[in-house]
Length: 342
Image 1 (cartoon, one colour):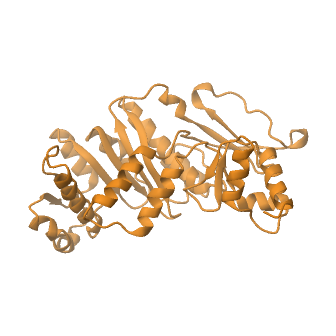
Image 2: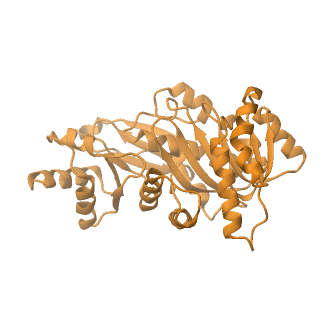
Image 3: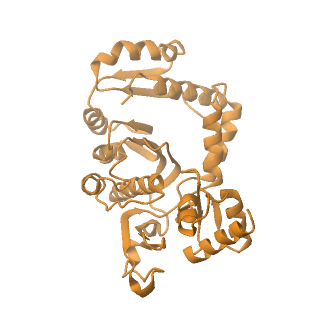
């Protein structure tokens, strides 16, 4: 999980920096770095040496993740933060991880399984996600919501709640930061449900599992449309604007520098918490209207807001926006902008 240890080094330096910033509130951090490959020992020792020089309490181990987590459970050792990064889908480790994560602890999860949750391997999605994953223009967001749905189900089994803090992807790896709360929020179960899309007319619909009924007709004439349903998946927010705002403040205060690309990512995520659920690709809208090119996301968002709809640019995928406007109204506004030369 630790690889060459560079991200672990970053975590250690930031933990030390945070303990200095809040010296009156925090104890000295205890840090555990694990990679199952014993051959990585030398490179890990070398890369993590700056932490030892700063007297950080550092445990370096080489065990399969299952063994490390099981030992921690038996020893009643709890972690405030777990950064789980493994090849492929991490879901087999979710329950052992949650068992040793402290109440209100943070889980950072990375998945490099891009085919299953984006609808390109439906059998794989059934096996790894216990969900139906259908192809969708907003495939990265669908993958994140499907993974959040799995985390929610695993956390709820323990009577614990889920609060997404940050969700993003580069199309190859899907990354989530979530807080696992001591208990479920009021009506949190309503955040798990299904998202449907008609390929013919582009209409989208959503239903929570608690109130799941038959799907209403889409916009296709003579009921010729057909819903492609994905889920169960997370229907709630993808980001916490408050936590991201705090991170931006910390980025200014910390002596550990942050890359400009990371800073821009935090700013984009803060501006788009992930609601409404429905996302639209401007390239798809242009194709449906036979326009010469995609409309400006910013201009379309402004036009939708002027018409009284919720709308914002998507922080998950470029060239996309999210809105609660029906597809017919969305296409009409988009076409009107084209006629006006915008």
